[in-house]
Amino acid sequence: MSKNYETVIGLEVHVELATKTKIFCGCSTAFGGAPNTHTCPVCTGMPGSLPVLNKQVVEYAMAVGLATNCDITQNCKFDRKNYFYPDNPQNYQISQLYLPICRNGKVEIDVDGEKKDIRIHEIHMEEDAGKLVHDPWTGDSLVDFNRSGVPLIEIVSEPDMRSADEVIAYLEKLRLIIQYLGASDCKLQEGSMRADVNLSVREVGAEEFGTRTEMKNLNSFKAIKRAIEGEMERQIDLIEAGEKVVQETRRWDDTKGASYAMRSKEDAQDYRYFPDPDLVPIEISDEWMDKVRDAQPEFRDEKKVRYKEEYDLPDYDIDIITGSKHLADIFEATIALGSEPKEVSNWLMGETIRLVNESEMDIDDVSFKPEHLAKLIEMIKNNEINRSVGKEVFEKVFKEDIDPAAYVEEHGLKSMNDEGALKATIEEIVANNPKSVEDYKAGKKKAIGFLVGQTMKATQGKANPGIVNKILTEILDNM
Ligand SMILES: Nc1ncnc2c1ncn2[C@@H]1O[C@H](COP(=O)(O)OP(=O)(O)OP(=O)(O)O)[C@@H](O)[C@H]1O
Ligand SMILES: [Mg+2]
Ligand SMILES: [Mg+2]
Image (cartoon, rainbow, N blue to C red; front, side, top):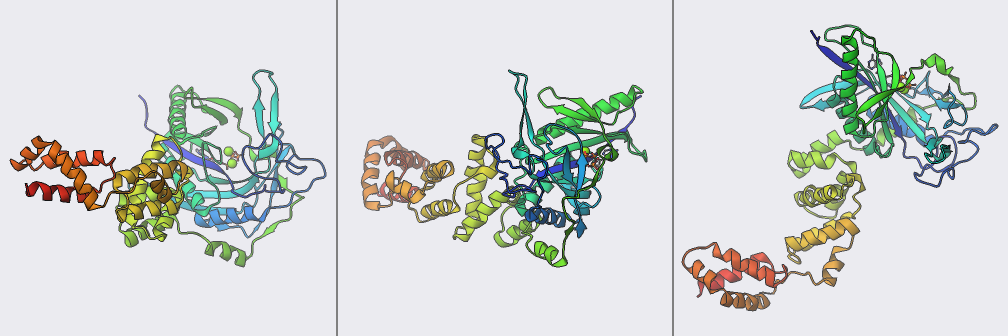
């Protein structure tokens, strides 16, 4: 009979930091340059070159550590992790083993209303490796060192998670903290946030952890969830069949929905770590730490409380808007220009999200200027355009960031608010639709809707529906 199992999960999360230059040289970290154009003797591991630490990396790592309740190691240093692989030109990676910059942190997650702390074992700084490109036509493997030396932090959790949902909640939490700090854009698809999932299973009630495997190549939340469920089953099947789980690194293939053994797991000693003799230890003064602490932004949880108090928005709106730092920035910037908060929220929750979904883009890539949304809202408020024209114009703002005032002017979309001009049009419509007039007179007040519709059509949607209604009622009641 099959027993009851519990899944135990710990994550190693690598995050590419948003510095302009690499961790130990002045080369650009920009993504997508021609291969090997963002390189120099340092990041290609030339003999005799010497690394110089980018201070901003330390500052970002410290900021993330403070935001995740870690202790900061005020005297920390770098170590060499030695291994041979073609994407690693020095044959060692500069990382931190003995004295990582942050330790003993925690973040709180919330899964279906249940709160839980996930402890962070440590956060260390390290350099990224280059990228291997395998050419299927020639069979050659090419290497691009543009990514070599891009700064990373690795956030190592304790094995505190028990389900895929907890893992996703933890990753979302980290992602938002780091995005709010501006320390990284944390895009799983683009690899600026990468999660390795360490997973083991054990019988419910067992004291000891089971043997873990580590899964790599997970580049979406969906893939992570599927990989966790697949690996959990694989391990349980092994145990049920009386076999043993082997400690190894496995590669998740999302299209096949299965993982494959990559290599058996190395221990720290296999890497022959030793302190990097080219880099001096880092001294973090109290003043520096205080400065970084004082510069911490308002995080999501605090923003949620403030939005409720200051703007009295529905919880649903607050959840969505603060769920993206970028969206929250647009929201606040538009309000700062004088727009009414609930009105701004409606445009973000409604049309903006609709267009984001329709164009299958990332919410963080929304790029219209808050000025343009504020202007649009103002024009509607002043009855310069009506709401349905407003939606049309907004689509242009969203897609091309046009200036709504100029656009409305240019395309003659201004509302017809002139009662005199509207009256003539409406009188004509009334004359041409005796049946509706008859219905109205016979007490079917709804017949007026048809006449309003006809007027909107005749004015290409530019008439002010309120004024149309008013004039129509006057005309009909005087007949
Ligand atoms: N039995 C276990 N079951 C599940 N997760 C575990 C278990 N034991 C450890 N872990 C998790 O595995 C991760 C180990 O990461 P860590 O960076 O310390 O080591 P590593 O994977 O051996 O090293 P490397 O950085 O070289 O990959 C941690 O997140 C930890 O919580
Ligand atoms: Mg690790
Ligand atoms: Mg690992």
